[in-house]
Image (cartoon, rainbow, N blue to C red; front, side, top):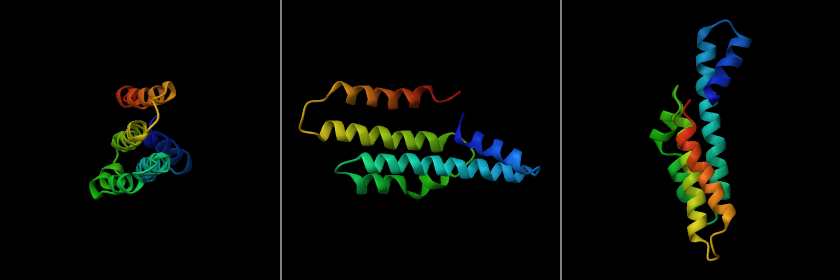
Length: 114
C-alpha cells in the first residue's frame, strides 16, 4: 500500500468527513518522503549537504505533499542516489551486499506502482 492509502484509511476510521481522509493521505505522503530522505541523508557519508539540498528543493516538497505516488518515488530516488554515491566513492572494492541493496532500491522504483 502507498503511504497515502494508509492515511486515507486512518481518516475514514476517525472521521466521516472526506476532507479528513484527503488531508491525512497527503500528510502521510510527506511523512514517508521525510523518513526516506532522512535515511538517505544519514546513510550518506560525504554528500549529506547535497542530499539535503536535493530533498528540500521547493518542487520536491510541493509535489511530495500532493495526492499521488511521487513522494514515494522521490524518497526512493534519494535512497538510490545515496547508496550509489557511497558505493562508488568508497575506496574499498564493491561488495555483494552493496550490489544487492542497490538492486533492491532500483527494483522498488520499477515495481512499486500497483
